[in-house]
Image 1 (tube, rainbow, N blue to C red):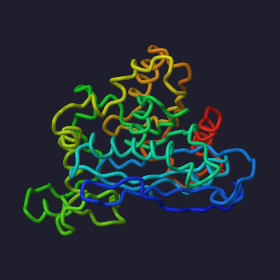
Image 2 (cartoon, rainbow, N blue to C red):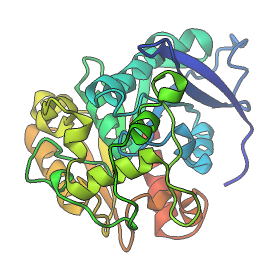
Image 3 (cartoon, rainbow, N blue to C red):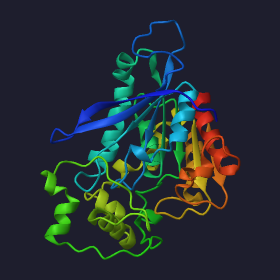
Length: 329
């Protein structure tokens, strides 16, 4: 894919409970128009909201591959990539899910006045891993996204029999989590006065050193306690869009799932994607598609060979999903 000239600016879309700014990075093609000053009668640009993964505990908007952002900008999208508050300082419902709705509403109501050629009535949503779950949750809003792309999401997390509630030992072994005052202080960011975290580096085995937050998070996965730790009140339907597929019926927006066939992370996998496709179609959804990538697991789209413009099935599927967004927005 040819290089595209882009503009990028960070905006605060809301504040956390203690006044922490929650920011979204906004990207657009400078080749389309000067979005701040232009009043030319050109095509208004739809927006796409990209929600990152990280198990609701780690990660940031920096996880989104630059090649995906650039390709979406080349399709005339304004690309909005927010950070959101991370558990366990907040629950999943209060943090990741509420903070996904906030930038979506911000795109509809405020972004068009900041970037003059943005069309706040045409918004797509996409996400990877739990970000794909967050994107699906937006379909339940009174004014849902026009279209959704959900990459290897965590599904059916309110189902106690799903793998989201089962022990997972697929990660390299790390030290056991211990509830020492030092570890708890690090987990709750007490060195910064308990300020709510909305970004935290992902642990990469062999490349980075695990921090207490990584050890705590992987301990929850290893013991099958992940969802319970994210939503301690156990009101799991509040954070499971799959439990509410029937509410929208025929009004569910066009949706594409992208899934690697070797993915076995909690809540992810072909079994759950196929179940979601069946349930959505059974509820009346008109356009639901699935793209399976053979021989791939979680986060396959972050590999260099999956970048749009590369040869091979991985890059082909990523491009197809992004084109799906442009088709239906």
